[in-house]
Image 1 (cartoon, rainbow, N blue to C red):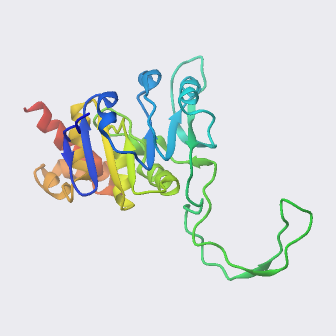
Image 2 (image 1 turned 180 degrees about the horizontal axis):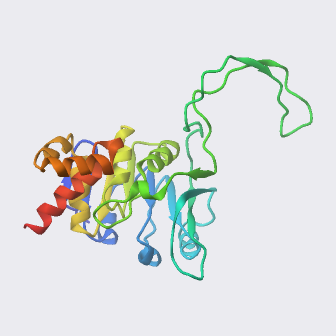
Image 3 (image 1 turned 60 degrees about the vertical axis):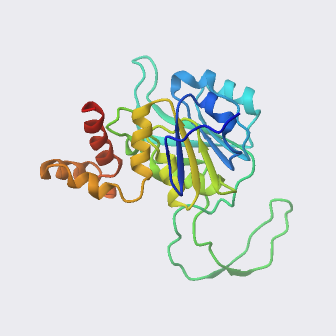
Length: 266
């Protein structure tokens, strides 16, 4: 099959616009596959060969993922306290499962340890009842990843009207799971996973059937597009963007607003 034509490409990211099932045969083997289709497309999610797979799933879509990839090596839970309402007769949804297939890196990708003096510590082996000799204990620079990761869901919402996983969550997962330099996200949305991969110095391939999502992702991963986009907006809108995304100087919110103007004025 001929290589598909990119919608956007640079040193760190390549974006394709179209049906991922048609584009995937021409894509190189990724080191990490991030699988997170829209809720109504899980049954059609394709099987992709990758060294490691992270699959976001729920009770309804899990059987399909396990038919494609088998039983996972382990499972993580993403807990979002802000929750998601679905029905007056069902509990508020406050978590998603993340099924993990294939090798990963060490789990020490969490928050940095506070500076504490070294101290002696006696530990017991899980394989025997004998204690290991006392010795200097040196905490690792960062904490181990927990099986339950608590990050608010609303941190990933964009004005495009589509949910995007929070950057903090994706960066944590990618750093732990990517054993090589190439990420593939066949349902990339507005490109949060591509931005997370870029922040870690990785290359990323993203695919989406929605052209507006591809345009938003291209703007987001391009080098330093934000100041130019914000400079074209009135001062009061710049202030609103700063209030909505103070930690990112407007971040994807600012890019998406500029995109909406471009899209509707075409």
